[in-house]
Length: 261
Image (cartoon, rainbow, N blue to C red; front, top):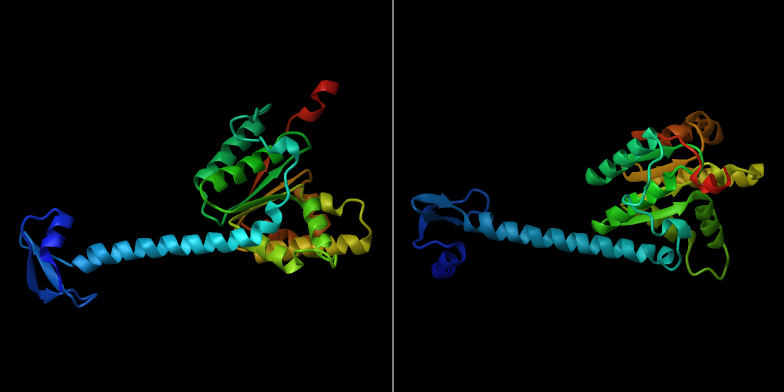
């Protein structure tokens, strides 16, 4: 039974009546306000129900991802010098670094969970700083994110093979697949100095992770050129990694060595 007085108070209406016509969406009778018909259920209740449903879906999704990320949360995946990295304390030393800062900020501002970004250049020019800042800003916005160097990722995956490991390989891979943003720092370093067998394994794992994230947001940093990366991973894997990816090339002096120059 519809309580018209309650409805009137809720909607700030002084007079209200029921129409003989029905809403085509829910078949309920229209209400009349100043001679205009409207459906209280579709216009008010259904919208509120959808908002609650959307909020619950987001809560469930984040809870599921948080459970998957628990293994990562037990340990710091960032180097100590990146734990305090922000856009505000990044100090560009060249025009390309200034442009990279701007594009990184725009990446956060227009985040739609499908974009890919590659920060490319020599060591010590702030690629990891910007990538860490991106993931931190998106986490503040209630997105889920992981920042991890590719060599460290390989180490964590290998650790799951230990019989005493509390985490399985599939659990780590699932977390990497489902997270809203994955930052893969130092792409290509994982291939240096490895035997053919180890390099093949690392290449396969990187491809497996990237392939599972098709249509999802990933940020890469690398010291290598596109040509070098294609040689390392092969044309098929390279094209999969950087499909719809915006490359941001950076230059400048290695700030880590500024006291020795």
